[in-house]
Length: 162
Image (cartoon, rainbow, N blue to C red; front, side):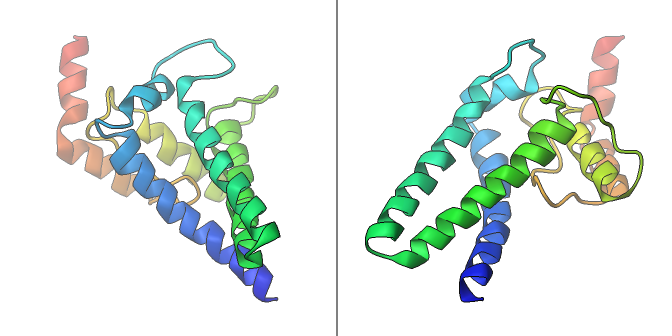
């Protein structure tokens, strides 16, 4: 039971970590070089942004190894990171960005909210003024729309298009 709780706690901590990394590193000057590819249209199977997943996979692999040899708790933390990575892949890469061989757009429930929240994240060009940085938790869509309107970025982009 304790190991299960470690995995669940790690998944929750990973969502907070992913939010923070996404908000302040990927959308900051340090990480935008990789993440920018995720905000641009392309027809490639992979994008430079996928390197972030590789970084987390390396960290999890190291934790699996160290946990197996010296500190078993680290093995369970690595498992939680891996579970989070699978959830991320299904929800973000699959559901939101349709990086799987079939198309499914959710019409109701939490999956729709998650889908809409992340689409609103991509409604802004560039790295500034984006909303919704989590991958499992999605704030209410109405609040995100309000935040985008309050920032003025949508009005400015609409004016640039005309």
